[in-house]
Structure formats: C-alpha cells, structure tokens
Image 1 (cartoon, rainbow, N blue to C red):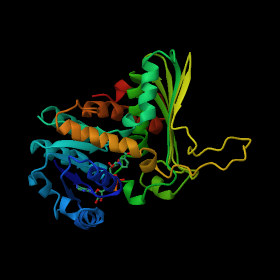
Image 2: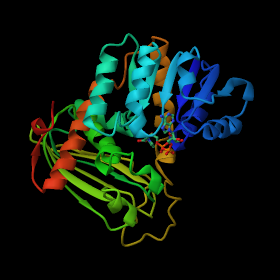
Image 3: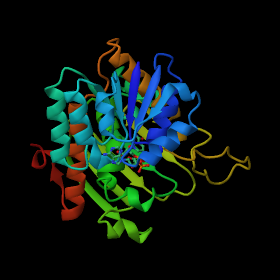
Amino acid sequence: MRIGLAGAGRIGARHAAALYDVPEVESLVIADADPGRARDLAARLPAPDRVTALDTVEGLFSAGLDGLIVAAATDAHADLVDRAVRARISVFCEKPLAADLDGTFQVVRAAAGADVPVQVGFQRRFDAGNAAAREALASGRLGWLHTVRSSSFDPAPPPAEYVPSSGGLFRDCVIHDLDLIRFVTGREVVRVMAAGANRGDDFFREYGDIDTGSALLILDDGTLGQVAATRYNAAGYDARLELFGSKDSVITGLDDRTPVTALPEQGEAPRAAYSGFMERFSDAYDAELQAFVDLVAGRRANPCPPEEALEAFYLAEACELSMRQGRIVGIEEVRR
Ligand SMILES: NC(=O)c1ccc[n+]([C@@H]2O[C@H](COP(=O)([O-])OP(=O)(O)OC[C@H]3O[C@@H](n4cnc5c(N)ncnc54)[C@H](O)[C@@H]3O)[C@@H](O)[C@H]2O)c1
C-alpha cells in the first residue's frame, strides 16, 4: 500500500512511525503546509527508500495513494478530506473532523457521497481497557449504571500556536471523553451543563479558550455522566474512564503509572507516570492505524465513521454553549 500523510506535526510524526511497522505499507508520502516539516520528518524515519516528502500538499492527491492520513491542524481537516474522497482516496482523519459544525458537516456530506471510507481517529475506542469496560457493561456484569466518569488531564499545555485553530478545550480534548462515553455505554447524551476555568497561561484566555473544563451529562436512560479535562496536570497524563454500576464498578487507565498519590502514602515509590497521550494510548494508536489499513484492504467495517464523530461534536458544541451561557443545554438545541 501507498499511504499519504497530510500534516507532519506531533501526531503526524507518531502516525508515520507506526505506519512504518505495518508490513503492508510499502511507501509513505508526506506533505505539510510547511514543506520543511515534511522533509524533516521524512529524514527522521528509517529506510529512506520507503518515504517521499512532497513540496506541496496538493501533490498528495495525484500521488497514487491507497489511503491518506489527515493529521494536519484541525481547521485544515474538512478541505483535505473533501479533496481526498473526490480523488477516491480512503481517509483516516484525526479528531475532531473540524473546528466548527459547518466544517464537520462538510466532512460528513463529503464522506456520505463518496465511494471510499473515512475513518475518524478516536483512538480511545481501541484501548484494551476501554474495550473491556464496554464488554463488561454490555454483558450485564455491572448492572445498570448510576454514574460514568471520563477524564483527560494533560501534564502540560500544547504550544500556544496550537490553540487558535484547535476549536477549544471541549471540541479539541473533551470530545475524546464524549465519544468514549457514547461508545462504551451505547447511550445518547440528551442534556449537558458545563463550566470552564482559566487559571493557567494567559494565551488560553487571549484566544477565547479555557485551560480546564468540566461537564455534567444526562444520558437518555437516566445515567449521569461527568467529564473533566485540563491542560495542567503536572503529576502526569491521566486519562481514565470509570463506570459505576448497580452490581459492580470498573476503571480503565488505573495502574501503577496513573499520576495520583493515594494517601496516606504507602512508602513504595510509584513508577514514572504517563508522560502524555502518546505514551498512554500508544497501543491504541497502533491498533487504529492497523484498523485503517484493514479498512483500505476491505477486510473490516469502518470502526468510526464521520456520523459518529458528528454526534460527539454536537455534545462538545452543547458543552461550549452551556459554558458560555451558564445554563443546561439540550442536545436538540445544537443538532441540525
Ligand atoms: N487522537 C489524538 O489523541 C490526537 C492527539 C494530538 C492531536 N490530534 C489531532 O491531530 C491534529 C494535529 O495535531 P498536532 O498536535 O499534531 O498539531 P501540530 O501543530 O503539531 O501539527 C499540525 C501540522 O499541520 C500542518 N498543517 C496545517 N495546515 C495544513 C494543511 N492545510 N495541509 C497540511 N498540513 C497542514 C502544520 O504545518 C503542522 O505541521 C489536530 O486536529 C489534533 O486535534 C489528535
């Protein structure tokens, strides 16, 4: 297979390295709005005969690709996906599909009219713990859920220049928690009440964003959900899903690298905490890209189509509105 990569930043570099380990991927074609970044990434990869760096992003659409990984800045996703499916190239697009609802719809429409698949990069669906939690709930072992909690605590903020095109904390980060809660419970969220805070660097406030956010979710079967995210959790990266049921409770992401200290302290030094999402979800990123290769080869169904990402985006949009207006928001208010 010949796979393209649009966007040679943080996650693009990680995806490129993972694709190298997939035997079916014979060659990789990299492009970035900044051609120097594409060249630098290509130079860092082993086996130079398997990688080409292009001078233009446009060149990707005539490079004879079997699949394209869209890992560019969020505000570039919609256009790149649109162009790829028109060129009949299967697409893996990083979350979120776009920074706003219009862009998200553009992708959903483009994918609906295409004869190639578009897979969205919600890698937490591929985390072994999250998959087991979904099974535990579906099997009846947990009984009925009274509470589901999901959290995403980054140890340090992204570079300031990442923020303006990211869509903001709810659409950029909390969207993982929102997708995961839908995926694991199989239920829909009907109302949200969200709040945000700015206690860290000024650039978040200056770009109209927050650095910490929380939301209470009401699911259609009466389960209550809570999501929480921050850019400032210096203890380490902490992404957890907690399901509390009438019969039993389970947690994913809780191990000897979870960056919390139980008090009173037990004396034994904990192992180094997860340094970031790349490390915590390393296996999940590999698994989602293998799934994309399988999808391109026609061996599996699409594990995360754009309609699923649209549903998560509605929830993020509702959280944003709730935070701005300080009130409970029904999902039908943002649904189109
Ligand atoms: N699934 C996850 O856990 C996860 C983690 C990190 C980032 N992401 C997503 O991946 C995307 C990229 O994030 P990042 O952290 O790598 O950002 P980044 O800023 O490190 O990299 C983005 C790259 O995109 C390039 N770019 C911008 N416009 C482009 C265009 N039109 N065509 C090609 N390249 C273009 C930039 O020059 C930059 O090199 C974002 O949408 C983000 O939400 C997902």
